[in-house]
Length: 529
Image (tube, rainbow, N blue to C red; front, top):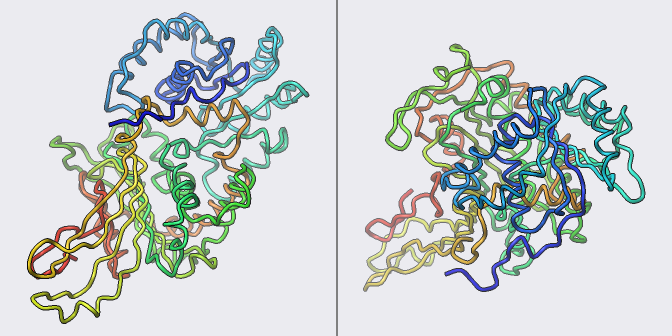
């Protein structure tokens, strides 16, 4: 049953009046996630009633066609419980009022005239604050920023701001990330840049900080004395969908690891903060990523796996292999699965491996962090009557980011009966059991933070570059050997991914489960391996 003290978004004050320019307004991201997020924020009273959203794109259109194109899509999405942020029927009256604040400007991102018209649009308003959101193809990021700068649209005043929101990917490798950052910083200050990663808008990701630092139960054991290893998983059941053109040029590693997975790694591995501020948090995250051991190319190859899904079955439905997907090269060796082992060489984590994996067409949709604690000594149980205990299983703490947000912990207990048989018991916390939160896309918190000037959940330049520095050895190794190991759709990666852990005497946590591997007991008090 939901608790009476449920935290609703409306408990926060509404953001100040501003105008938001949404570059790439005709794209999938704007339609599927950004506009629904803005509608949700407005529904919860977090947007100033005078705020306007102006879509900017090269496609022909006007205010009426822009609104009409969104209405049917968002109504269907709102009612779809399987869609991200779906599950609540659209409030037609509220949407009708909100949609009147949506406007459209046809314009080429590369032409100066587009930015002149944007400037004129801003001047017509009472306030001069503006948020520029780049939901475009990555090739436009630096050019749009430079055009905004050349038009004088990034200059701030004492009573108004100018901020730029940039989506991933932040470059394709370390060199391109450095170049992109340099071009952005040539026309604006770091404090104006909001590099967004929607994973960090998930309640469970933010709850990592609270769980660790607000509970004395966890922090004393959050180190290499008690933790054996950590696994971070981002599994999807979908294929490339409408992103084949982008995906076939980038692959799973570039798409997920230096941003999503490394952000989760940083959140779980940071040191306690000196103060709960954006600068303190971002500095500690940068330190963690900067401490990732720089593998040689040979070490990177040995400690990583490239996989690609073949034809198989997902939820009793036959699905094609990656090379049979529309828009994919029939001879493509682009990886749809990336698995790797990294080491964080600092005092807290020395000797603790971090295993990362991400893949498409896997058995379940599941983003989670699994913390495996070292097993307790079992000598005292060796000669217990009627019990043959070979080993005591590890305790696991599973932090599930999606879809079943929560935390679960498993531990050993005696099974009722005359003999000392052990069983694995799990206890946990699911957000849905305690909080009646509205359906969200994950972008609401982040967009609200952009509007209010809170950079805590956004990546800083040093975090970006440290992440790419850690990934670069894998990119270099895979460039020399781009072979991929196949796995059938519906499986949890290729066999080589399981071997990556087995050679260390470990195994992956089962995708979609909330307890550690081998949870089921067997006769004699032994635990399955």
